[in-house]
Amino acid sequence: MEPEDAVDVPKAGPGPSPTRTSPLRYGAGMFGTSLPINLVKGSMLYVYVELLGLDAAIYATVYAVYGVLDALDNPVFGHLSDRTRSRWGRRRPYLVTGALVLAVTTIALFSVPGPVADSAVGLAVWFAVFAITTEMADSLINASYGALLPELFSHEKRRATANAVRQGAQLIALVIALAMTPVLARNVLGTEGSAVGYGRLAIIFGVVSAAVILWTAFGVREDPALNAEAKPLFFRSVRQILSTSQFWTVGLVNACYGAAMALVLGGLQLYVHHTLGGSALDASILQLVVIAVSIGMLSVWAAVVRRKGAAWTWRLALPVAAVGFVPMYFATDLITGILAGLTVAVGYSGVLATNDLVIARVLDADAARHGTHRSGLFLAAFGVLGRLNGLVTAAALASLTVWFGYRSGADPGPDPGQAFRVYLSLYPFALLVIGTTVSRFIRLPVAPQEMTGGEPGGGTQAEPVPGPVS
Image 1 (cartoon, rainbow, N blue to C red):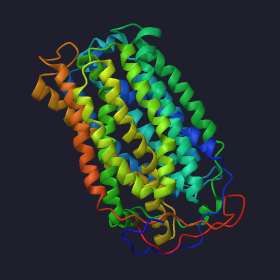
Image 2 (cartoon, one colour):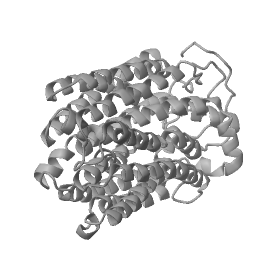
Image 3 (cartoon, rainbow, N blue to C red):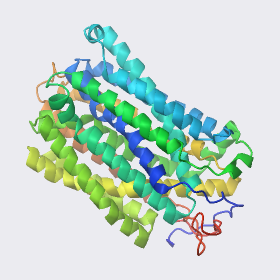
């Protein structure tokens, strides 16, 4: 228990009964959800602006719309998931539907027909349609997938195990979708200067992603007792969520972190190309090293969580992540880029290991206070703040046009190296400094207490009890 900032938390009524869902099967689903969307985040900017020649200002405009819609559709999908009552469960129908749609739209996004690519208007329209539909499919999946974590695993030890599995699965997906993509798309499945390899890779990722998400969806065992709860009312729920102080504070920190990582994912290939003067292989090597170290550091951060608690560790990881971006500004080649990337990996891994545990505490407290589980809507509301990072990304990219003259690969301006040095270092650093500052003023509920022998399937589940927040 973490003693600081103590206030009372309302006692919950009977919680959800233990379920038999395997943490491994649930956590593996994150591989499927992460594979296509990280191809989008990591390569969409490079493919459309650098390779296909879409004007950066047009890209930024579409991406701003993308960010707004990404924020608005989250509450809708989350609320629908919370209110669904079916023999298939509340979350499974959306996982199945979303998996199939995501596969199709990801493939279409990276498979631009020749006549469309040759038309400035056609390219912009194609990009807008499939970038937005891919985003909506991703939102549909994650509104339900994320809600399952606190509902399936109410004991924090088991929850932490499931979260560690899914974050590990996400990092493996990052190795493939980010680190391996430049080489696979530009040297194995395609050639330098061509988008063909990215289209072929999207087909592979789309099919694999759908298969993994479906495997997870049909292995989830939702608690049937939750179907007996009253269906949450949308406007009442929104009012209650918006009146929760942790929604604004934790949500803002999460948004700062998400925006920083969105800049990194979208701009890293351009940073390697323009700032470090590296090749596709160099981009893959840099990303592979960073992600591999992040995977290794998960166990270290997990040990800190067990000793000091999620909230304390979260507050430590945020400034470590912020400072980690400073060396990226001074890197000049692959070797110094890798050394700088190692500092990013340490903090990034820490936030990964703790962020969802912090959010899950807020969801537990909401369910205890109001007597109904509406994790989908609550997470979606967090998503409204977090997914507005599309606006931050759009503004950051537009600033490169204004300050550095960068418009596209064909018109990079006088100093694209400095442009992406700022984009990948100073902007993420500033965002995480804001998040770190806000985190110091957040008061979080303690984790649910566990009774001896209270593991799912092995005994009685303890109820959350009044206690301090940290």
